[in-house]
Image (cartoon, rainbow, N blue to C red; front, side, top):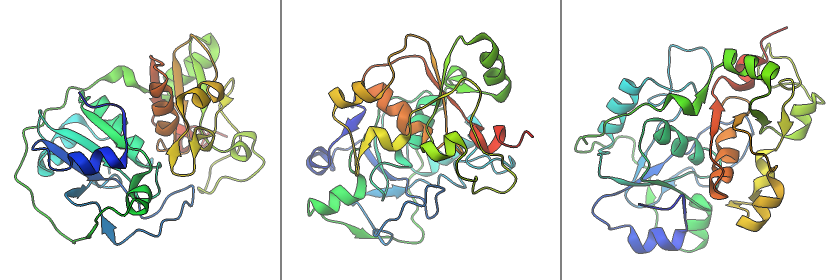
Length: 268
């Protein structure tokens, strides 16, 4: 079983493992307006994981909505992913969209997946080889099977219910100015502010440039609480960064509110 986080050195040494699949989860556009200078190259053997289309529910008007198990299974098979695969996922920002992919696989019952700490920027900084991005690549189909873990996702009604019962701690992973409502939301029609009773742990607070903070520093940043966690952000992407940070310090019972502020913020 692979660890939750792997280094670029580990990936370089193990990239030829027979069951290893490397996924590039880079996004062309993102609400955080994070910029990358690495839009034209990939890590060798990397396969593009289309988080915005193939692995999102296109009929849902909310951005980045989790796909059905059937859709996820079909698209994973197209990428050549099998039940015995070992997956390493990265993105071209460092740590941004890759934790979302890690979480999606967890939701689909697959656990043998790791995030590449530092992502493509660290890979290039280490002077490891890269390849040009090709438009279309076809792989031998895999035999991946989804085993949907419903407990890892929360709906709007469940979050509303928790705001009354306080059985779970709600964590907002957006930057502080969005949490407080000091700045306007970039998505049209959304109010500013946060979910009642939520606390703010900005996703940037668990990172140091393109890497996760060391474990001892993560323990200082993440609020100690024995309650289960419900984590949200703008549209379900950066919330997964905070969730993965909690996983690194062995916090259990964490779920993502997948609709996030894109859904909640529509209420007037």
